[in-house]
Image (cartoon, rainbow, N blue to C red; front, side, top):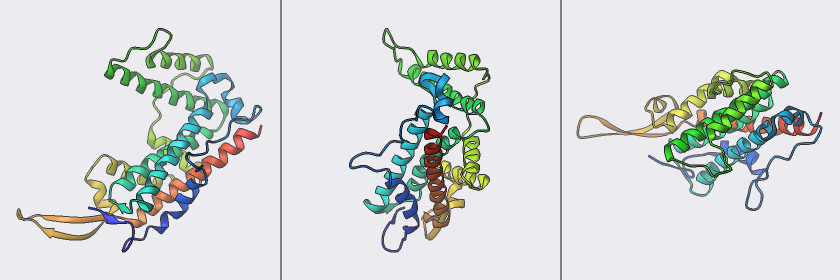
Length: 259
Protein backbone atom coordinates (compact mmCIF):
# COMPACT_ATOMS: atom_id res chain seq x y z
CA UNK A 1 0.00 0.00 0.00
CA UNK A 2 2.01 2.91 -1.29
CA UNK A 3 1.38 6.61 -1.20
CA UNK A 4 3.01 8.84 -3.77
CA UNK A 5 5.54 11.29 -2.37
CA UNK A 6 4.10 13.96 -4.60
CA UNK A 7 0.57 15.05 -5.32
CA UNK A 8 -1.78 14.55 -2.41
CA UNK A 9 1.05 13.74 0.02
CA UNK A 10 3.22 16.58 1.31
CA UNK A 11 6.50 15.47 2.86
CA UNK A 12 8.04 18.92 3.12
CA UNK A 13 8.26 18.43 6.88
CA UNK A 14 11.19 16.08 6.20
CA UNK A 15 13.26 18.87 4.65
CA UNK A 16 15.06 19.92 7.88
CA UNK A 17 16.39 16.40 8.42
CA UNK A 18 17.36 15.99 4.78
CA UNK A 19 19.14 19.36 4.82
CA UNK A 20 21.03 18.55 8.02
CA UNK A 21 22.33 15.29 6.54
CA UNK A 22 23.11 16.86 3.16
CA UNK A 23 25.59 19.19 4.84
CA UNK A 24 27.93 16.18 5.10
CA UNK A 25 27.49 14.98 1.52
CA UNK A 26 30.48 15.30 -0.80
CA UNK A 27 30.55 14.74 -4.54
CA UNK A 28 30.28 10.96 -4.24
CA UNK A 29 30.65 10.28 -0.54
CA UNK A 30 29.82 11.59 2.92
CA UNK A 31 32.34 13.78 4.72
CA UNK A 32 33.62 11.97 7.80
CA UNK A 33 33.83 13.55 11.22
CA UNK A 34 37.34 14.97 11.71
CA UNK A 35 40.20 13.20 13.45
CA UNK A 36 40.92 13.92 17.08
CA UNK A 37 43.05 16.79 18.24
CA UNK A 38 46.03 15.37 20.10
CA UNK A 39 45.18 17.11 23.38
CA UNK A 40 41.41 16.99 23.09
CA UNK A 41 39.07 15.71 25.75
CA UNK A 42 38.00 12.79 23.56
CA UNK A 43 41.62 11.87 22.82
CA UNK A 44 42.24 11.68 26.56
CA UNK A 45 39.22 9.42 26.93
CA UNK A 46 40.59 7.14 24.24
CA UNK A 47 44.26 7.24 25.23
CA UNK A 48 44.37 3.95 27.21
CA UNK A 49 41.84 2.18 24.95
CA UNK A 50 44.08 1.71 21.91
CA UNK A 51 42.10 0.48 18.92
CA UNK A 52 38.91 0.36 20.96
CA UNK A 53 38.36 4.04 21.56
CA UNK A 54 35.12 5.95 21.27
CA UNK A 55 36.10 8.20 18.35
CA UNK A 56 36.15 5.33 15.86
CA UNK A 57 32.76 4.08 17.04
CA UNK A 58 31.24 7.58 16.98
CA UNK A 59 32.50 8.19 13.44
CA UNK A 60 31.13 4.86 12.24
CA UNK A 61 27.72 5.27 13.90
CA UNK A 62 27.35 8.84 12.68
CA UNK A 63 28.20 7.85 9.10
CA UNK A 64 25.73 4.97 9.21
CA UNK A 65 23.03 7.38 10.35
CA UNK A 66 23.77 9.72 7.46
CA UNK A 67 23.52 6.85 4.98
CA UNK A 68 20.14 5.79 6.39
CA UNK A 69 18.88 9.37 5.98
CA UNK A 70 20.31 9.51 2.45
CA UNK A 71 18.41 6.35 1.52
CA UNK A 72 15.22 7.91 2.85
CA UNK A 73 15.95 11.11 0.92
CA UNK A 74 16.27 9.11 -2.28
CA UNK A 75 13.03 7.28 -1.54
CA UNK A 76 11.13 10.55 -1.21
CA UNK A 77 12.90 12.83 -3.68
CA UNK A 78 13.89 10.40 -6.44
CA UNK A 79 11.68 7.30 -6.25
CA UNK A 80 8.79 9.49 -5.03
CA UNK A 81 7.21 6.50 -3.38
CA UNK A 82 6.58 6.22 0.34
CA UNK A 83 4.98 3.17 1.91
CA UNK A 84 3.91 2.76 5.56
CA UNK A 85 6.97 0.66 6.51
CA UNK A 86 10.18 1.85 4.81
CA UNK A 87 10.31 5.39 6.30
CA UNK A 88 10.05 4.03 9.83
CA UNK A 89 12.61 1.30 9.16
CA UNK A 90 15.16 3.74 7.75
CA UNK A 91 14.62 6.34 10.45
CA UNK A 92 14.82 3.67 13.12
CA UNK A 93 18.33 2.87 11.88
CA UNK A 94 19.25 6.55 11.77
CA UNK A 95 17.88 7.19 15.26
CA UNK A 96 19.83 4.28 16.73
CA UNK A 97 22.99 5.37 14.94
CA UNK A 98 22.87 9.01 16.03
CA UNK A 99 21.76 8.06 19.55
CA UNK A 100 24.66 5.62 19.93
CA UNK A 101 27.15 8.27 18.84
CA UNK A 102 25.63 10.84 21.20
CA UNK A 103 25.57 8.34 24.08
CA UNK A 104 29.28 7.63 23.65
CA UNK A 105 30.10 11.34 23.74
CA UNK A 106 28.27 11.93 27.00
CA UNK A 107 28.46 10.41 30.44
CA UNK A 108 29.04 11.94 33.82
CA UNK A 109 32.79 11.28 33.82
CA UNK A 110 35.65 9.71 31.88
CA UNK A 111 35.24 6.37 33.65
CA UNK A 112 31.61 6.06 32.59
CA UNK A 113 32.39 7.05 29.00
CA UNK A 114 35.15 4.44 28.78
CA UNK A 115 32.85 1.81 30.26
CA UNK A 116 30.22 2.64 27.66
CA UNK A 117 32.51 2.28 24.67
CA UNK A 118 34.17 -0.89 25.93
CA UNK A 119 30.71 -2.38 26.51
CA UNK A 120 29.85 -1.60 22.88
CA UNK A 121 33.10 -3.11 21.61
CA UNK A 122 32.49 -6.24 23.69
CA UNK A 123 29.01 -6.57 22.18
CA UNK A 124 30.39 -5.90 18.69
CA UNK A 125 32.87 -8.74 19.07
CA UNK A 126 30.22 -11.02 20.58
CA UNK A 127 28.06 -10.49 17.49
CA UNK A 128 31.08 -11.08 15.27
CA UNK A 129 31.77 -14.35 17.09
CA UNK A 130 28.18 -15.43 16.53
CA UNK A 131 28.53 -14.78 12.79
CA UNK A 132 31.82 -16.66 12.67
CA UNK A 133 30.16 -19.63 14.36
CA UNK A 134 27.16 -19.54 12.00
CA UNK A 135 29.38 -19.41 8.90
CA UNK A 136 32.12 -21.74 10.17
CA UNK A 137 34.58 -18.93 9.55
CA UNK A 138 38.23 -19.79 10.18
CA UNK A 139 40.62 -16.93 10.89
CA UNK A 140 44.03 -16.70 9.26
CA UNK A 141 47.22 -17.73 11.06
CA UNK A 142 47.79 -14.21 12.39
CA UNK A 143 44.14 -13.37 12.98
CA UNK A 144 41.99 -13.56 16.06
CA UNK A 145 38.37 -14.59 16.43
CA UNK A 146 35.61 -12.36 17.65
CA UNK A 147 35.55 -14.31 20.90
CA UNK A 148 39.28 -13.73 21.41
CA UNK A 149 38.93 -10.02 20.71
CA UNK A 150 36.02 -9.81 23.14
CA UNK A 151 38.15 -11.45 25.81
CA UNK A 152 40.85 -8.84 25.16
CA UNK A 153 38.34 -6.00 25.57
CA UNK A 154 37.07 -7.47 28.83
CA UNK A 155 40.63 -7.88 30.08
CA UNK A 156 41.38 -4.25 29.24
CA UNK A 157 38.27 -3.18 31.13
CA UNK A 158 39.44 -5.11 34.18
CA UNK A 159 42.87 -3.51 33.95
CA UNK A 160 41.27 -0.06 33.89
CA UNK A 161 39.02 -0.89 36.82
CA UNK A 162 35.90 -1.09 34.66
CA UNK A 163 34.45 -4.56 35.31
CA UNK A 164 30.99 -5.80 34.44
CA UNK A 165 30.73 -5.06 30.73
CA UNK A 166 27.14 -5.78 29.79
CA UNK A 167 25.18 -5.58 26.55
CA UNK A 168 24.07 -1.95 26.09
CA UNK A 169 20.30 -1.91 25.60
CA UNK A 170 18.93 0.21 22.76
CA UNK A 171 16.23 1.68 25.01
CA UNK A 172 18.84 2.85 27.53
CA UNK A 173 21.03 4.35 24.81
CA UNK A 174 18.10 6.19 23.22
CA UNK A 175 16.76 7.43 26.54
CA UNK A 176 20.11 8.85 27.68
CA UNK A 177 20.98 10.26 24.26
CA UNK A 178 17.59 11.95 23.95
CA UNK A 179 18.10 13.67 27.31
CA UNK A 180 21.53 14.92 26.29
CA UNK A 181 20.10 16.32 23.03
CA UNK A 182 17.26 18.19 24.76
CA UNK A 183 14.56 15.74 23.61
CA UNK A 184 11.85 14.26 25.78
CA UNK A 185 13.34 10.79 26.41
CA UNK A 186 10.19 8.72 26.92
CA UNK A 187 8.36 9.99 23.79
CA UNK A 188 11.58 9.44 21.84
CA UNK A 189 11.67 5.86 23.10
CA UNK A 190 8.05 5.47 22.02
CA UNK A 191 8.92 6.60 18.49
CA UNK A 192 11.73 4.07 18.38
CA UNK A 193 9.37 1.30 19.52
CA UNK A 194 6.91 2.11 16.74
CA UNK A 195 9.74 2.20 14.19
CA UNK A 196 11.04 -1.15 15.44
CA UNK A 197 7.57 -2.61 15.17
CA UNK A 198 7.31 -1.58 11.54
CA UNK A 199 10.83 -2.86 10.82
CA UNK A 200 9.87 -6.27 12.20
CA UNK A 201 6.55 -6.41 10.39
CA UNK A 202 4.45 -6.35 13.54
CA UNK A 203 0.73 -5.57 13.51
CA UNK A 204 0.38 -3.17 16.42
CA UNK A 205 2.28 -0.19 14.89
CA UNK A 206 -0.41 0.09 12.23
CA UNK A 207 -2.86 0.89 15.01
CA UNK A 208 -0.63 3.56 16.54
CA UNK A 209 1.28 5.19 13.68
CA UNK A 210 -0.75 4.75 10.48
CA UNK A 211 -3.76 6.54 9.05
CA UNK A 212 -6.64 4.76 7.37
CA UNK A 213 -7.46 6.22 3.96
CA UNK A 214 -10.10 3.72 2.94
CA UNK A 215 -11.35 0.15 3.20
CA UNK A 216 -12.64 -2.42 0.72
CA UNK A 217 -14.81 -5.40 1.75
CA UNK A 218 -13.41 -8.85 0.96
CA UNK A 219 -15.25 -12.03 0.03
CA UNK A 220 -14.67 -13.62 3.43
CA UNK A 221 -16.50 -10.85 5.26
CA UNK A 222 -13.38 -8.92 6.22
CA UNK A 223 -11.91 -5.74 4.80
CA UNK A 224 -8.78 -4.69 2.98
CA UNK A 225 -7.62 -1.49 4.66
CA UNK A 226 -5.65 1.24 2.88
CA UNK A 227 -3.03 2.52 5.32
CA UNK A 228 -0.66 5.46 4.89
CA UNK A 229 2.01 7.03 7.04
CA UNK A 230 0.89 9.06 10.06
CA UNK A 231 2.55 12.35 9.11
CA UNK A 232 2.50 13.82 12.61
CA UNK A 233 4.40 10.93 14.15
CA UNK A 234 6.79 10.55 11.24
CA UNK A 235 7.54 14.26 11.53
CA UNK A 236 8.37 13.77 15.22
CA UNK A 237 10.66 10.88 14.34
CA UNK A 238 12.44 12.90 11.67
CA UNK A 239 12.84 15.81 14.09
CA UNK A 240 14.31 13.51 16.74
CA UNK A 241 16.81 12.21 14.18
CA UNK A 242 17.73 15.75 13.16
CA UNK A 243 18.30 16.90 16.72
CA UNK A 244 20.42 13.86 17.54
CA UNK A 245 22.41 14.33 14.32
CA UNK A 246 23.15 17.97 15.09
CA UNK A 247 23.78 17.30 18.78
CA UNK A 248 26.27 14.54 17.95
CA UNK A 249 28.11 16.71 15.45
CA UNK A 250 28.29 19.60 17.92
CA UNK A 251 29.46 17.42 20.81
CA UNK A 252 32.04 15.67 18.67
CA UNK A 253 33.41 18.96 17.36
CA UNK A 254 33.79 20.27 20.91
CA UNK A 255 35.24 17.12 22.42
CA UNK A 256 37.57 16.31 19.53
CA UNK A 257 39.20 19.73 19.51
CA UNK A 258 39.13 21.20 23.03
CA UNK A 259 40.98 19.89 26.10
